Image (cartoon, rainbow, N blue to C red; front, side, top):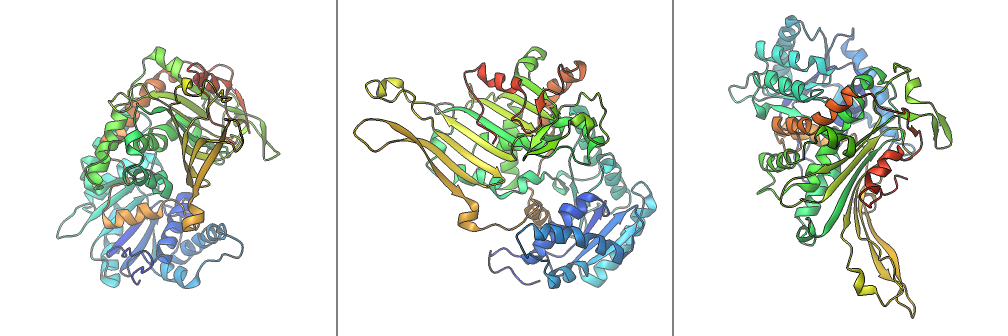
Length: 510
C-alpha cells in the first residue's frame, strides 16, 4: 500500500503474520480491528499476509466472514453512519488464510511452515514472520517450544522472527520466572514482545513526552515539590464473560503488575539517555525494582481488597460478583485493589504512590493525579483565604484523553479571596480522534522491530516481585466482609481509610 503522507510514517517492511487463536475473541475484537486501522492508515506493507491458526473448523472464507461483523461493530463506534471501507477490508481479507491445527501437535507447525513458505513465494513476504499468541496463557510456553523445534523461530539469512505474547505473563513471581526461562531457551530477548495494550494508548505514550520534552515540569517532578501521586484505573463493567478466568486471577494479578505498574513506571522513571527501546525499558525497570516489598504486617496496613455487591450503574440494577456466570456463590476473589506504594530511590523518597483499580465502580476512568505540596500558610495569614487551593496535575488516560492543571487564582473584587481554576487540554479538541483498540501502535512497532513499549523479562519479574508479598498474605487469609462495596460506588470504605490515615483523600472517581 502507498506511503502514509499525512503522518510521514512509512509502512512496515514485508512480513507474514501468523495468529495463534485466530478464532478467539481477542483476535476478533482487538487484533483484526487494529490491523484494519493500520490498513486504513496505509501502514501495512503491500507484501503482507495473515495466517490464522486454531483448532476450530474453519475455511478461509468462513474465517474472514466471522471477522467482518466484529470489525463493523468496532468501526460503528466511531460515530453515526461510520462504515467499514470496503476497499480496505477487501484488501486486508485478500491477504488472509486459515489453517486448522492443535497447538500441541508438532504436525501443526510443519503444516504452518510449509504454508508460510508458499506465502513467501506468492506474496513476497521476504521470509519475515511475526507470530501472535492470542491464546490462553497455558499455551504460551508450548507454542514457543514448538516454534523452536520446527525452526520457525530461527533467525537466519537476514530473515527475522518475532513473537508477541499476551498477558497474563505468569500468575506469580515463580511462574513468571519459569515462563521467561522457558521461552528464552528458544528465543532471544530481542525476538520477544510481551504486549500490554495500555501502552498502546496515545496518552500513556505521551507521559514521557510531557515530562521530558517540556522544560517546565522536570525541575518540580520530585520529592521536593510533589506531595503524593494517585493512579486510578476504574471500570464500570463487571467480569462479563470472564468468570472462570477471574476466579483464578482477581484484580491484583489482572491489573497491578502490568497495566498499573506501567503507569507508575512512566510517571516515576528517570530521563533515559535516548528514546531507544533498551534505554527506556531500563529506566522503567529501575522504578519497578525500587518499589518497597512489604512485610506481612505492612501488607495489612498498605493493601486493601474489595468485592462488589449488587447496586446500580447509570440507574440500572447490577448483580453482585458472586452471582456472575461461572463465579462461585461464596467467592473470595477481589474485584478491587488499593495499595500504598513506596519507591525507594532518591527522587521519590517519602512520596507515597496510591493506586486503585476496580470493577463496577461509578465511572470508567484511568487517570494519574499528581498533587503538589502546598504553600506555607503564613503567606496568607492576613487575608480571607483559609484553605489555599492545592495544585493538581491530571493526566487522563481514558475515556476523555487529555491533561489538566488545577490551581488557585484571585477572584475579582476588593478582597483577597481565591478560587479554584482549571486549565484543560483534550486530545479530541487539538488532534481529533478515531476509534482505536490500543493495539495499532504496538502491532506496527513489532513489525518494524521497535520494542520500546513492550516489557522486558526483568520488568515483568520486578512487577511480580513487588506484589508477591500481597499474594502470599491474601492467599493465606480469607477476606472479611465480602462483598464490601456496592456496584456503582467508588469502592470499599477501607480504601478511603488507607489515605485518611495519612491525612489525604482520593480524588472522586465520578
